Amino acid sequence: MLKVVENPIVVFERDIYRPEPTRFWILDKSFRGAISRLESEGYIKKLSEEISQDEELFNFFIGLHEREVKRRKELLKTSFPQVYEGEGKWDIACKKVLLDPNVGIGGIRNYRSKPFKVRCLHLWTAYHLGEKEFMNPIGEFVLSKI
Image (tube, rainbow, N blue to C red; front, top):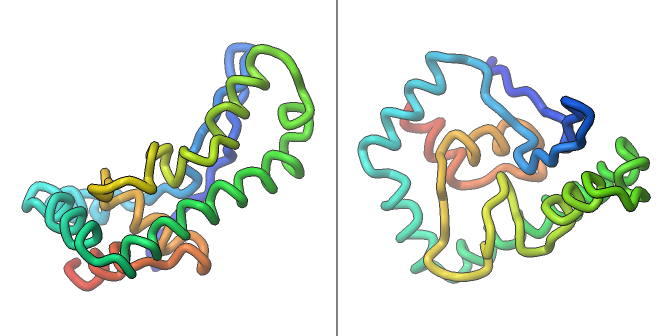
């Protein structure tokens, strides 16, 4: 079983709050290496083009990004109410990133515009494995290749 960890969306270090828009990470080093090899074979570009050309697939991924924005809001309210309700400089900085409807999974900006930005196969695979409602064709593709 591949190990994926869910990180908190806010990290407190050196007396400041820092937003972390990537919730899921793959821990297995050899699995990460195998994914990196797929990236070096050009699959980021190939999948970005495929998703951009398929309207249904493109809209599916937009829906995942939108779901993540909603999920981050829920997590911020419940796990970090001091940040959600706060008005300090770092509270506002976190909310600017985590609640911005144009910042999706992994901090991908402007995800509603084409070309679709895959950015990283690790990211999509980690989300695919991390939470059932984020299962996606990129994660399936990666798992089928490794």
